[in-house]
Image 1 (spheres, rainbow, N blue to C red):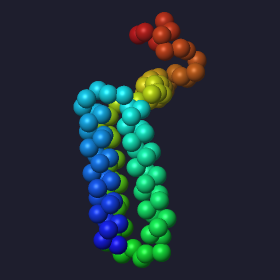
Image 2: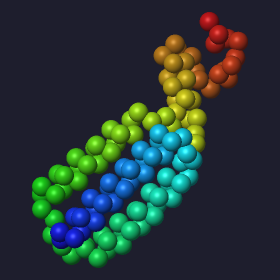
Image 3: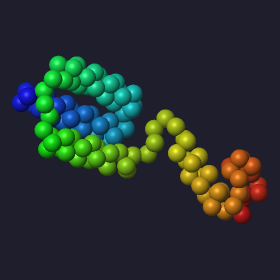
Image 4: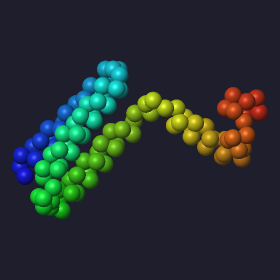
Length: 113
């Protein structure tokens, strides 16, 4: 079990390092994606090997806290590969003004006021 914890910590540290590197260097997110998929496959294989080991309650709590910390890291990042996020913001603004968002295009003259 100790070996699995060490591998898990190394994997999380590697993912965090890869994320920070790609985030601050302006490199393509594709390489980060491949890093994430590759490390996830390694984690899956480790999980299959360790599936019969009992997990204590405090380990589950630690995992949940770790997942929340990773989520918090991603809050500050702009969406990648899709502009749906901006469409949802625009829809919300239009709906708050009592207008059907499907009635007009975002650049329509009726919405310029």
